[in-house]
Amino acid sequence: MYDYVIVGAGSAGSVIAARLSEDPDVTVCLIEAGPADAAENIHVPAAFGKLFRTRYDWDYDTHEEPFLGRRRIYLPRGRVLGGTSSTNTMVYVRGNRIDFDEWGQPGWSYGELMPYFLRSEDNERGASEYHAVGGPLAVSEGRANNPMAEAFVEAAVQAGYRRNEDFNGAEQDGFGFFQLTQRDGRRCSTATAFLAPALERGNLVVETNLQVHRVLVENGRAVGVTGSRLDETVTIRAAREVILSAGAYNSPQLLQLSGIGPAQLLTALGVPVVLDQPMVGQNLQDHALIPLVYKHSQPISMISAGGPEDVEQFLNEGRGPLTANGPQSGGFIRTRDGIPAPDAEFLAAPVMFADSGLGTPTDHAISYGPSMLAPRSRGSVMLALDDPTAKPKIMHNYFADESDLDDAVEATRAGMRIARQAALKPYTDGQHQQPASESDADLRDFIRHYAHSIFHAAGTCAMGSVVDAELRVLGVESLRVADASVMPTLVRGNPNAAVIAIAEKAADLIRGVAAPSTAAAGSASHHQA
Ligand SMILES: Cc1cc2nc3c(=O)[nH]c(=O)nc-3n(C[C@H](O)[C@H](O)[C@H](O)COP(=O)(O)OP(=O)(O)OC[C@H]3O[C@@H](n4cnc5c(N)ncnc54)[C@H](O)[C@@H]3O)c2cc1C
Image 1 (cartoon, rainbow, N blue to C red):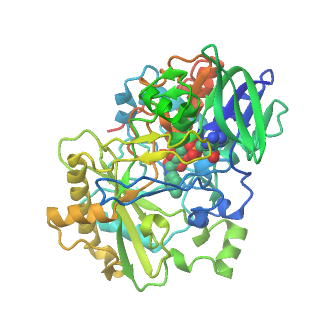
Image 2 (image 1 turned 60 degrees about the vertical axis):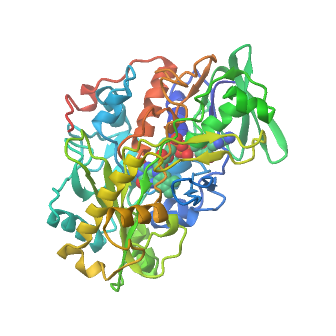
C-alpha cells in the first residue's frame, strides 16, 4: 500500500514521481512496464534509431490508414524508464502560446504554465525572460555541428524566411537551430533528469518490468492497480490516488481495460463496464511528416558516424557526430496568410531518414520535412481484445480532413523551394522519393504515398471531456491521467517539453500546492506571437 501509485515512468510519470516524493511523509510507487534504462544506445543520441522495434519499444503501427493508401504507419513508443523521452530525438520546443490559451482550461494558459516550464529547466544559455537555470532538465545547444544543419537554415533564409535564435522565445516563426534535452552531449531523459536523483529516497519505489493490466475501482473510487511481471500477478494498492501516465496510446487503453470507456465496445469485448465514457480513446491527434529526402555525395551524413575518432570525441568531450539527435535545425512557417500561428514545422536531419526511420540509409542525404502542426483530422485508440497484453487498435485518420491535405501541399512546396536555394546546392544532387511534379494533384499523391508519423500522439483522455482541469477522471474518484493524452489539442511543436510542464503542474495539483510564481523563476511577462 502506497499513498500514490503512478503507472508509467515516461516523460510525465518520472517527473510526477520525483516531485511527489520530495515530501518525505508520502509514499510513492512508480510502475514501469519496461526495464531500466541501462543500454548505451539510449544515452548516445545518434543511436536513437537503433531502439526502434526493440525491447525498448511498444512497437505499435496504425491500422490501415484510409487516407494514406491503406498503409500502416509505424508508431514507436519508449518502453523503458524515461518512456519516450528515453527514445526520442531530444528537440526542445514548447509549442506556441495560443496552443495553451486555446485549450480554454482554467489554470492552463501559456502564462500560467510558464512557471512550470521554467521550474524544470536548466538552460545552457542562462536565465532570461523565457528561460531558467537550476532545474533538473538540461536544455543545451547541439554539439554535432553538421554542416548540413547550417546550410538548411541558410537556404531557408535565402528562400525568404527569417532566422529565429529561439523557438521558445518571443516568436516561433522562422528558422534556426533547435535546443536539445542533452547534458554534455548525452541524452537527458526525464529518467536521467528527475528520477535518478530521487531514487535514493526511502519513500519512492520504482517497479520495472511490471505491466499494469487494470485500475482497481471499488465503489466508484480507484484503490490500486493490478498487472503482471512475467507469470506473476502483482496488485499494488493506493491509499490516496492512482495516476495514469502511460502515454497517449496506453492511458486510454488502461482506462478501457478497467471498464472506463465506450460501453458498447467494452460490452462487445466482455469487459465489465464501470463507467460509460465514450470519449476515452477518441480525439487522437498527431503531426504527420512529409519526408523530403535529398541525396548527395558529400561523406558527412550520420551514416559515417561511429568510427573510433567519433567514439573518442564523444567519450572525452561529449561532442561530435555521436551527439547528433536527428533534427538539429529547422523552422516554423505559416502556409497561408492570416492564420494566428505557424502550422508547419521543418525538422532537418543530416541523414537519410526513410520509411519512418526503419529503412537503412543507402546514401548520404539530408532529410527534412514539414511536420503538419495544426491538423483537423482526428483518430482513436480502442481495445482490440480484452487481453491487456494485446496491442490496441490505433487509427490516426491522417488527412481525413481534406483541408489538412491542402496545408500539407503548401508546406511541401515551401520545402521544395528551400531545396532549390544556393546554400543547399551541395546536398541536393537528387531526390530519394519525389513527386511527379509540383502540381496540386501530384503533391497530394506524393503525400498520400509517403507521409508518416513524426510520433507526437496526444489527446485521447482530453481535459474537458475525459478529465477535468485538475486532471481527475470525470466520474471516478481518486484517479487522474497526466501525460500527452490530456492535451485537448496537440501543441504546435514537439510535445515532450509540454508533457513535462503538464507533469510539473499535475504534481502541484495532486499535492494541493499553489503554482510557483513566474517572477520567482526569473520571468515577468511572456509575449509570443
Ligand atoms: C522516435 C521519437 C522521436 C521523438 N522526438 C521528439 C523530440 O525530438 N522532441 C519532443 O518534444 N518530442 C519528441 N517525441 C515525442 C515525445 O517524446 C512524446 O510526446 C512524450 O515522450 C510523451 O510522453 P508521455 O509521458 O505522454 O508518454 P511516454 O513517455 O511514452 O511514457 C509512457 C510510459 O508508460 C509506460 N507504460 C505504458 N503502458 C504501461 C502499462 N500498462 N504498465 C506499466 N507501464 C506502462 C511506458 O512504457 C512508458 O514508459 C518523439 C517521439 C518518438 C517516438
